[in-house]
Length: 388
Length: 131
Image (cartoon, rainbow over the protein chains, first blue to last red):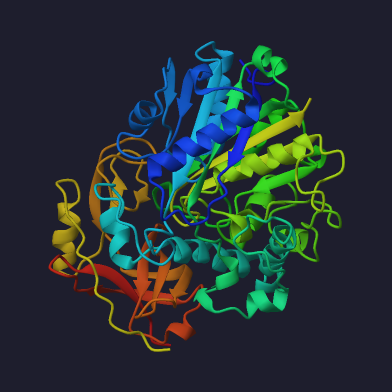
């Protein structure tokens, strides 16, 4: 069975807040859900499937269904870190195709900024996870784990800090047009490589922002999509994968996108050359570079050339990416950037991105999420969508 | 830049991994090896991640080469997180210590050095072999 054409994205919402001192976590989830439902032209009474991940409070899906007053016949709380919500779209399409629900609601929210969380530089202890005793004492943080992937890529393929910097430069060119973006200032390659070193070889401007906020996506069956007034965005293909340390056969130069990408392209029946716009999870600049290689937009090791010289900037480059400014400049709600990747791809397909960054005739888009760590274990999710 | 002192959190042993930490306390590095397929693995576990077979503990030489590393600088005491590939063929997360953090390089030969933790068994870190 395939999900191709079996489901549509009918509503999306990105919460405008970037610092939510005055809101609770459940409230941010629910406000995001209301935004996406309003965008679709639906109400919470239409929702019969609910998807959320580890950022939801309490018992996750149970707590949020209770808070929002949802009556559900399908629930899925798949947790793969920041890639969860890209996977949720694929799972929602599967559930709809199987008749398990008609209107699927996906929510994300978090307030790491209001809580003063040391997101990137404090080791996280995952308690009883089998790896903890063999990793936590050594101080693995988000940033130094991704930095090890960057260091190895540089060693093996000659990738440079200036090439990585181009990814941030492109994101900043897009963010200047986004009134909600946390960082709207256009930056140069020199400014990126001249910013303080956080964890070799990643500078401060190689790192994404830390923001509060949330987002939501509504996935519906075709009959409902056709009854709504919004432009129709069809789900063409989805792929998911988990990559880890493989029993000690560690290779930091590729991600699970080498599996999730081909699966999504095969289901959609398209190739990377057909894609007009990409939303690529950009926790760090290196995340984008390795992911683009793994998805087949260039040969392995050539990502540095692919991203250089403004090639990712909408209007001038050949591969416009993250036109909202992405996690690097706009928003990284709950330290999880997968959902907002789908949101901007849908804006592009609808022709509702900011006019300065809207891709001409954007008929086919890809969104990719990476959750967890490139350095140890992560979930990868690729989603291909088409404007109908 | 010289390495500074960082407090090392104690690893928590469980019934599956206790022999590893007992050996660590005696200054020996153990890795897992499958009794069925013969493959070594790390981190160690009772069930082989390659074939599902039962595993045993084997001593490692404690020598290897740096696969990758990063010096985290935005903390009070900067330190080098690393992956070291042991001569036995498995790659393990660790720290590179007792050296100039700015002189660490991928491919550098290193040797195990157990370092004390906060109230737990020592953990295997690595230091560059003298050139």
